Structure formats: structure tokens, C-alpha cells
Length: 400
Image 1: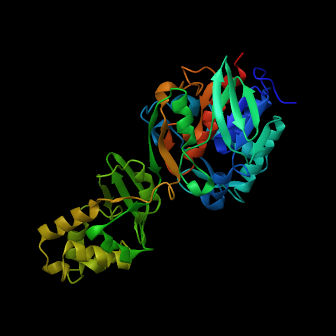
Image 2: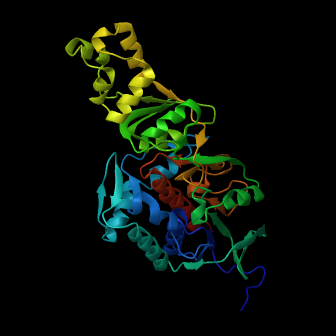
């Protein structure tokens, strides 16, 4: 029988069956709420499945608020402190999912990301969550303390609504800006969304580096005050690799990225090389620290030919400075199609950091990537999904 216009069909409606939505729905259901979880996709957790090369980098041991970008850098602190990596690891282990630390605190499944999706779906089943897939969310209305959501041909009604539909990153998986349209409808501001954790493109003279496509090296990449020591990869379009993906979240159009190609070499390394092996060419010297093709290209660009012993110390110091602070001016990024996440989103100014609830609209919550909180590469964004979802689920189930 179709519901009457003012009788709730559920206690909570969660929009979006990604990481944050699945986790929030399962928790709320297990805490006694009648939950409907809606998604236009034909299966849950699609972005989870492709994460971490198919093994899901599900958290990071070094999670801390300063590893997140937001217009309010303190906003994430409350949620992150109340649901930690150890909490999610305990859940993973309860399901017998084997995991390992790859590097820099990044935790991955030994097997497959499918295990994480299956775990979250099972958590929803344990909470009696009504998971509905494969239809579009139509109108969303709010009146008399109730949210009415049109899903396909049905109307679902609940006093609580959770926006967990993420951002527009990876549109081929169905990602859209739906969360922002809905937030604006309810009077919430939106921080301009932009691609984050994304390869950067080069043009003009810097496009000469395209011939190095496929070459990678461990570097320190800088953008403003942010600095990351990881691999950088040259591509046919520009720069990629973990170090570049990290700084891309901080980069803005018109800005520069600085790369230190000699992170392991002591100061005045080239002068020492000149004394020890004066007949060595710069390209050969660089080849001891960098891939040969990259060493040759950098040596050509700094313009030092001939042997080190025939080169003035001043020129070698200048070359070393350039190699330690090589400035690239990206022409852009590869956009949302190649971005791992979206920076920006629903402004934290209108949300409670404790509950993830909209301060001006009781019963409305926003979690995960939809919110203006963006983590570093390496499991930080999943931990934000779990922590923000937990904060909202607890608040909803404490809601009278």
C-alpha cells in the first residue's frame, strides 16, 4: 500500500551507496533505526571496487586533521577523533579480511576491494537496511519535519536525510554534483568543487618533457607550504605519480609546482662530484641519482656541457639550485575524469563538526566526499568517510 503523505516510511533515508553512505546506513540500522539506502547505480560501492588498484586502501595509520584540506582546517578534528583507523581495522578483522601496510601507513586488503564492499553490505543487512538501487532520485522536499524523496515511482518519507552522494570525481562511475544541488536547495553554501589527487598537464616549452613519458623518480614535490616525498611520473600529458597527485590538491590555476630532483644528495653535491671525478659530465653525474633519460634531459635544460672539472663552481651551484627547485607551471589538470576525489563541496560553515548535521535544517546531514573535507592520498579519504558517517549515524540514532 502506498504511504500517506505524512506518515514516515523510514526513520532515515541515506542518499548514496558509496563508502560513507553504506557505513552510515549500516550503523544507523544496527542502532535501531529503519533505514532506506538509495542509489541510482545498479550495485553499491563502485568507487570502492576500483580504489587502491582493486585492493582498497581503506585507511591510513597516520590519520590526523592536518592531513585534510578544508576552508575550516579544524572541522574534521571531532569526527576523526571519535572514529579512528583502529576502529575500522577492528571491523575489518572481525570479518576475517587480511590486510597489509604498503607504505606510509597505507593499509590495503591482501585480497580484493570486493571484501570491503561485501563487509559494508553485510553490515547494512545486519541493520535491516532497505537497500534500493537502479532508479533516479527525483524531487526531495522538506516540510513538517519530514523529508520526502521521490525514488523511481516511489515516495519515501523520513525525519532524517543523509547526503552521501560524493562529488563529481570519476563521472564514468556515475559521479555527479547532485549533492551540491541538494545542499543549495536547503540553504547550504558550496565551496567551489575542483579535481583533487589528479595528474597535472604541461604545455609549451615544458611539453618537451613528454618524451620522458613513463619515466619516474623519487622526488620532493612542493606547492606552497605543502611538500611530499614520493614518486613523480612523467606522462604524455604532463606529470603524475603519488608526489604530484598529493600536491595537485593544493595547486590552483596559475600557480607553480616545485620539484626537488635531488632529495638524497647533500648540499653542494655537484661541487663534491667535480672534485672527485672532474672528467665526469653532468648527465653522468645525475645518472647516479636519477633515471638515465631524465638525467640527460635535465642536464640539457640547465645548459651545462662538457666535464664538471671544466665548469665554474658558480655554474654548478646554479645548476644544483635549479635541480632542487625545478619550477613547473602546469597548464591545468586532467580533470574530474582522472581525479581520485573532489576538493571543495558542501561548506562546513553550515554543518556541525560533532554531528555532520545542517545547523539550519534539523534532520539533514552530509557526510564523506560531498563535504568540503579532502584528505591526502593513501587511505585518508576513506577514513574521513568512515568517521563522518559514524558521527552522523550516532547523532541520528540519538535523535528523539
